[in-house]
Image (cartoon, rainbow, N blue to C red):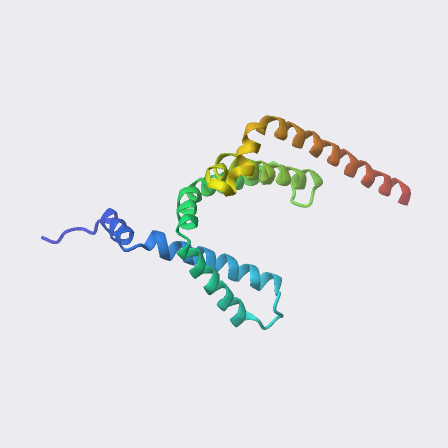
Length: 172
């Protein structure tokens, strides 16, 4: 009798051969670097070959830095959950009629982005040895910094909002 295909066995096979430690991190870095270079067109419009070579080199260099690969493998699932939550929030905002062009949606987007950066910085980067020294200090004062950031954000929103109203009233 034929044995059924076991996905857990296939995943263990891929893990034993370094698929998760070499191939996936390489592909992730390669695609991100290549897409960024293609978008910003730093080497001109016909620079696809140069962008591919640079992305290939950076992807291979990333894979050889084992600490970076370990950090990526450790934190990527968490980042995925945060991105899924962010997508859920954006879907809910769209469901309630918030348009992407509105100032409130932009401010909310920046607040969420800033919050994600703070959470990642305070919780994960502090564990990266000397590179995380700054984040260890920031973690101790996280509440104060977050309150200060919220107050600063409100001040910027009020200043920017009042400037737009003045422009509209002066044109009338």
